Length: 452
Ligand SMILES: [Zn+2]
Image 1 (tube, protein in one colour):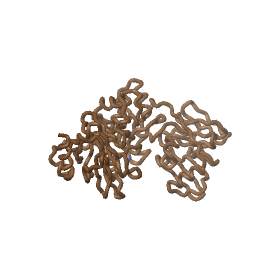
Image 2 (cartoon, helix red, strand yellow):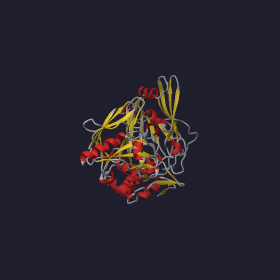
Image 3 (cartoon, protein in one colour):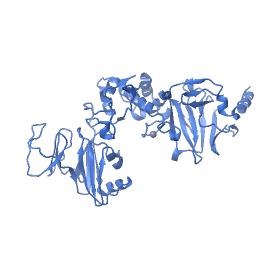
Image 4 (cartoon, helix red, strand yellow):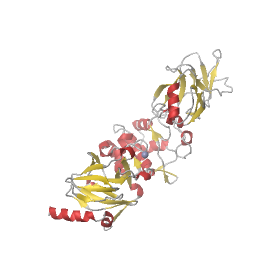
């Protein structure tokens, strides 16, 4: 019986897959019900791969509305995949040809995919199936095709650790699902929707799943955030430093649901980093600027909630003003952790007394600065004396002076971590600890939204 089946299988596989699949019923599905995740592409693209499934395989055909159930291959537990002359060739363990071309719409699933079966790609387990796409240089992009819910299973722990409170995990699951739904087609030129890195969302497949995170996905099954009837780009980040940001203050365009809110749930997250002027010059040059020798670094603008929006770097050849998130893009988003920072002279970061409106750091030295309510910073003469009633400083006039460092090393002293737009994960955790539900957390940080 088994031999007979194998013979039939091989004959059928030599027919084109498209012709074969056309006899199967189409599984109608919404476009965001499934997602294609790029696992290997560009520099990590491969020429061969090994697929394994304990219960055997099933070949399916994927289209924009879902997939057609295809040929079951219960007799095989290993399939060798190779790119040969622009085709994706399938062979069994002993090298016998199974298909001369899987095609770009063909997908190899575990036979038991509906019973939580997993497929192993070079020994790494994934839910759903694996697709391949041959590149112009003859290598293959490897793509994991799976349901949106299973995708979020593989994302959630990487974005928020499973040990966090359940309501925070549920808020993160809904945000990740919303973000995923809006990312369909983001990498379409490479044949998939999302990549598996921080560029889209970190995805680790079945190995990244935990009971607590899967439960948070299940308890919010299918829920997405909407604003004015449309799914939203549910941006999130680690720590706000006390205020979240308007989208337009960080990037360029405004969104009604991405508005700055005061964040009383934010745990303190101080950071500091010292950079030499040479170091800054190298980073600017790597980004295509030609500053010459750096002479000074100055904050020349802050927005209404204290985030730096203009960092002016004066060089012997050019003066460069980095704006908003460009500051972190050029200097390094893990180096300058947020835009909520002040500058200090030297490696100690001392050099001024920063008197603030409640959000800035203080470093004691001889120079004396005043930061006004609209965050203008004025360097005062050391013999000047100003009085405060606790919240408001008097004698502030013409406060346009920048915070400036000229000594060859600048220290950034800041609070918070991330771009500041949308939901701060540290605050979501804190709200959950205080007893707020996931929808209350989401509605606090995303303005005017609906969850459905
Ligand atoms: Zn990406």
